[in-house]
Length: 177
Image (tube, rainbow, N blue to C red; front, side, top):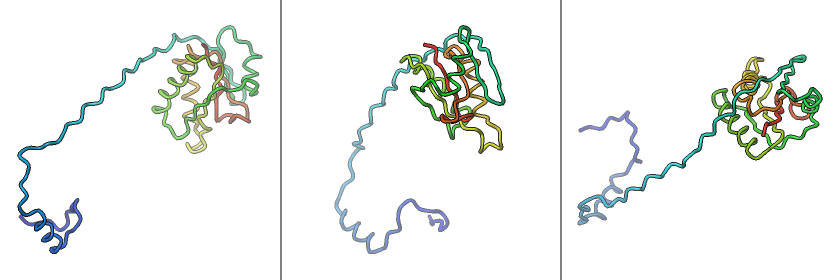
């Protein structure tokens, strides 16, 4: 049974002198009859309550020079203007930089559900401008599309953020309680 010199061993190389010392040290030792290892108890998974999204609500979407805003029935343009101008302070922020669309959508959903549960009025979702995506703001478009469709039941209104809050790289969302 020869050793393959190209195969890497997981153990460090031992000199013949060290091996001899080790064998002398364990001379006369008898192996245990059985394995006395204690098996760890399996960790019980936490019960996660899945909250369903509220039913979709139609939003009126407006695009002005690349800036997007949307509002539900009963929300006037002045409220959306205040949101777009940064006059409504965001109470929480979700930063999605570096996430793929597939990773970001569950994070966004959980963030909005939590914001609605604790009755936050306004939140900021930072998604970036798409500067590292060949000029395509894939994440921004996916976030705004989700807010206007499947997550619209959680949205009172949303708008591209004010320049001081990230401009087109962020979206301010007024959350429906």
